[in-house]
Every structure is written in C-alpha cells, then in structure tokens.
Amino acid sequence: MLRPMLSPVLRPLPALAALLILATPAVARVEFRSLHPPSLAGAKKDCRVYLPPSYDRPESRTRRYPVIVFLHGWPGSEGNWPGQGHATETLDAMSAKGEIPEVIALFPDGGGEGLLGRSIWLNAADGQSEMEDYIAKDLVAWADSTLRTRPEPRCRGLIGLSDGATAAMNFVLRHPDVFGACGAHSGDFRLRKDVSSRKLFGAEPGATRRRAEYSPLESLPRVAARLKDCSIYFDCGTDDESIGDNRELHRLMLEHGVPHVFHEFPGSHDWGYWRIHLGDALRVVTSKMQ
Image (tube, rainbow, N blue to C red; front, side):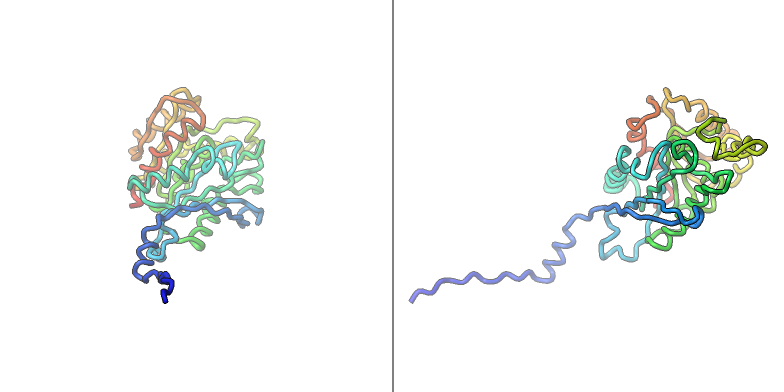
C-alpha cells in the first residue's frame, strides 16, 4: 500500500535562530515620558525620549550612551523637534553612516509663565518657573538614573533653535560642569525688554540685571576661561533678524579665545532652515563624544 509522505516538521537550529536575530535590523524608538520635577514643584512635564537603534540589542545591554537635550523655540512644545524638525530621522541617518555616535536624545517641554508659555528655559524672577534648574538638575538626574547614559559633561550636550538656541548657549556658559557642548540655531544673545518675557524677569530694580545675566553677549567675558574644553557651535540665516547678535557673539568669542564654530547660511527663521542645518550642529556637538 502506498502511504502518503508526511512533510517533516522543520525546527530551526539554535545557531540559525541566533543568526536570524542578528540579521534583524535594529530600530530606534521614541518613548513618551511624564516627569514631576522638584524644581517645578512637582508640576507635570512631558518629555520624549529617543533611544538609538542598538539600545535594546542583547549585546548592548551594558553599553552607555551620550545624551543630547533638544530645546524648542517659542511658542513650541516637546513635539517640535521630532515633528517639524525631523530630528529622530536625522539622528538615525547620521549614526547609521558613522557621521555621529549613537546618542540618547531628550525632547523636554519648555513651557513657562511668560506670554503664550514663554520661558527662554531660565529661572523666572518670581521663583514659580525654575526651568533652568529643571534642565540642568532634574532632567539630567532623571536621565542618569533611568537610562544608560554616560554621566560626564563631555558626553552631554544641547541643541536649540530660537529661544532654545539662546538657552543652549546659556546652559554651557552657566553650567559647563554639566554640559560640555551646545548647538544654537538662530538665537538671540542679548535679551531685550519686551512684553512676552516681562513676567520672567520681573520688575525694576532687578529686571535689567537679570536680562544681562541671561544674555551670552554680556556674560561671556566673565566665563570665557571655563569654556576651553567645550564644543560650541552656532549658526544663523543671513535673512534672520538675529544675525547681528550671532556675528557679535562670534567676534566676542574670537576676542576671548573661546573655541567655537560659527556659520552664516542663506535662509531665515523657519523650519526649512533648521532642518537643513541640524546635521552641522550634531557633528560639532558630538565631536568629543566618540
């Protein structure tokens, strides 16, 4: 009698299974986190966290990564850089090509108590919006205790645009023991009196002094000697109204011997400009993180 032939049950060999796992391309992911920082009296703050492609691979379970904090402009939110800025796609592409190391990226919300949520990422005069302390203390401490970071200044940087650019520069000038690198697109480096920031600086006497403290063009001469080991990058579009501040900061850094990279590019104050030049900032900001 003819018996039907039975197909053998195929069982993948352990070695083959391991090869299949290794052949599966690693993919970066973005997590949505909510923080309750002490500096903001426990108020809820959203933060997006980009974890690079290798972060979840078994062979990387002890690996630690540099951190870059992305600061949005005003008005804005934590979704701007990953959304309009295409920041996660840029990180993926540049790290895949070996142009930059893989990094953890943090995208915090910087809403404050100024007009339409303006904060300029600084500590407000009334003590009710301590955004500088949130980033330099609480966010850094949370990241170092929760993620596999490399917790030293040269492996922490910031990249910001507009108000976020002003802040990124301020964080390195004011906290070089925390952040060793910054990239600033289209920043204002001398803060001027206006309605949108009035609540942040308070009334006179005191408001003018506080604006000067948070103006890199005013504070740089006092801290220049502490910046020799920092990686500083900034750029601005030639049609941007902030170009004057950027050129002045470039001259001031040359005068005080502060190492930096400055570029002027065609363009204005918009996402088309910032998307194109994010890569320029990343190369400099990560240059000592290899």
